[in-house]
Length: 258
Image (cartoon, rainbow, N blue to C red; front, side, top):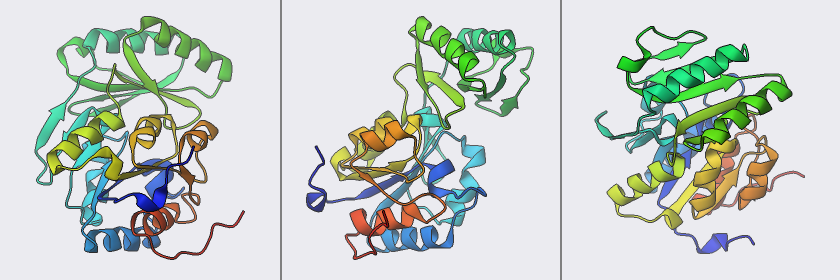
């Protein structure tokens, strides 16, 4: 049942990046920038809630003149306005080593996020000595991806999601974007019911479910659309700008074409 959106007093807008805020070229459309400025001018907080690390999202945050927190690596880290680390949730290094072995076993492309850098299709020799935030698999073959997913689920010690239909993202159990946003809400003295959260993939479902208004992008995976309260335009059609204006600022906007 859809929530009564007109009754929501939105104080915070949480935005996924890839497939949501960014268009297919990896750029922030000008209309999205304008809508975010309108939100700021109306006293709303805008928070990037992303699977990306701080290193790969801070320039976008800076370009938007964001004045609030950042939820990065699917909630593994939370950063304040001055770039100070508020919270960090690590994946056990032994689990990272095991997943690296799993990727090699299935000849899968992979990436891993340590606290210091990103690793693509290779890993350092001293895995056990580093601190880790996330492990990811990129697998085009549906059967192999299903096998890897089953192996991960059997361990019962991971938070498993994706940021596209052909990848798998793995965080520490219980670590997700909703948990990160709850911490941010506590710091800002607001409730999750005052949050509008927008995204397109499985790693967005937790925050879309728990936000006052959960928004799926027009290009979102079907399960995300089914979970959300509303569906906006695609990331190539300024869907974020539409969502901010219609459901956070309650402005009159042209209806979505069916």
